[in-house]
Amino acid sequence: MAALAFLAAGPATVTVTTAVATAPAVPPPTVTRTPSPSGSPTVLEPPPGSPVDHTVGGETLATAGAVLAGDGTAPVPTVDARAWLVAETDSGDVLGAYSPHARRAPASTIKLLTALATAPVLEPEQHYTVTAADAEVQGSRVGLVPAQEYTVDELQHGLLLASGNDAAHAIAVAAGGVGTTLELMNEQAQRLGAFDTNALTPHGLDVPGQVTSAYDLALIGRHVLEHERLAELARTRNYDFPGRDGATFQIQNQNRLLGSYKGAVGLKTGYTSQAGHTFVGAATRDGRTLLAVVLGTGGRAENAAAALLDWGFGASTAEPVGRLVSTEDVAAMVADAEQEGEDPAGNPFDEYGDALSSPGGTSDGVPSVVWFSLAAAAAFGGAGFVVRRRNARRGSGRYAPRR
Image 1 (cartoon, rainbow, N blue to C red):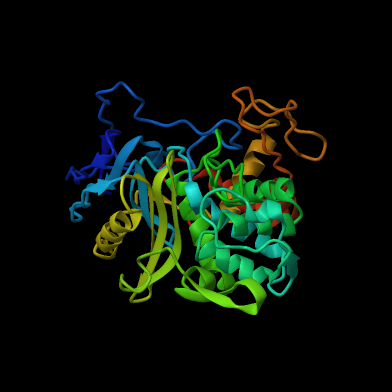
Image 2: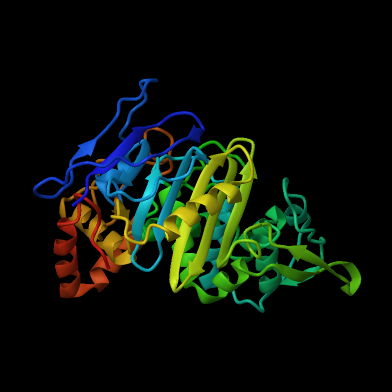
C-alpha cells in the first residue's frame, strides 16, 4: 500500500505535490508529518462535544495541511484555499485533501444543510406568507415581498439558486421557527457524522462559533445529491421567481460551473468577509461523480474547484486517503461511545442512552449536542446493528469502514 505524503498548514496559496515513497510491509501506511514553521499543530483533534474520540473518515484526515497518496498520481494543481477536499460520491473515497477537518466559517454553503434538514418537514406546495423579518434579513436576497404568499418550492429555488438570505429565513420560520430549524440542522449534521459543524444561522452570515469543515460539507453535499428533489434544484440554472402583483423575474444559479464545466451538477457557492469564498461543487463524467469542497479562497472558489475536479477525474486509480462515512458508520461510532458509559466530552449517559451535559453547552462555549437521534438509530438496529458496530471498530485506523 502506498505511503501518504503530508504538508504542513501554510498561507492561503497552497502548492501541493505528491511524494513517492516505498510501500511499508504491512498497513497502516507510514505517515510523515512536516512540522509547521509557524508552530501551529500539524494534527487536528476532534471538535469539542464530538461523540467519538478519533477523526471521522480516517486518522490521516486529521492533518492540518495536505494529505495525498504517494502513489505516482499526477500532482494536485496550485489551489488558493485554506481547506479543500475531493471525493467520490459512490465509494466515499477521499482522493485528496488539505486541512479537511479544519473548522472554518461556512458562508452560504450552510444553506445546503438548511435545505436538507427542513425538506422532511416541508411540502413543496405548502404555502407561506412572507413577513417583514424575512424580507429584511441582511446580505444577499432573492427579493421576497412582505405579506406575499409563496410556495415552499419557490422559497427553495430562492435559497439554492439565488442564495437568498431572506428565503433561508422564511424556510426556517416555515419549518417551525428559526430555533427549531437550527436544532434540525445540527441534529442532521450529527446524523451524517458532520461533527465539525455548528449551525447558528439558516443562511450563513458570520456569527462567532458558526463553523463547518471541508469534510463535513462533503458529507452534506453527498446527501443533497442523494436527495432527488434537492439535487434537481441545485443543478437548475434559471428560474422564473414570483415578483409583485403576479409578475415574475428570472433568477440565475450563482454556481458558475453550471453550463461551463463539463458534467457539473451543483451545488452551492458562498461568501462572507470572515469565510472568504466557499464552494461545494459536484460533477459527473462517465458515470463517476466527484465532489470538490473549497473553503477560504481569495477569489471565486469555482475556479479552484474546477481545477481539483479535473485532477480528481484524472486520478481514477489514486489510493484513497480517507473515506466519507455513511449514516450507518456514524450510528455505530455513537453506539460505541454509549457502550463506554459516557461521551468523549465526559458527560454521563442517562437511562435512555442520551448524553447529559451541563446547561449552556461545553466549557469552551460550543453548544452541547444531544445524541438522542443517533442512540435511537442504534437501538432500532437490533442484533444486526451490534455486528455493524463491531465491524466499525476495525475501521478506526486508516479510514472508517466502507459501506
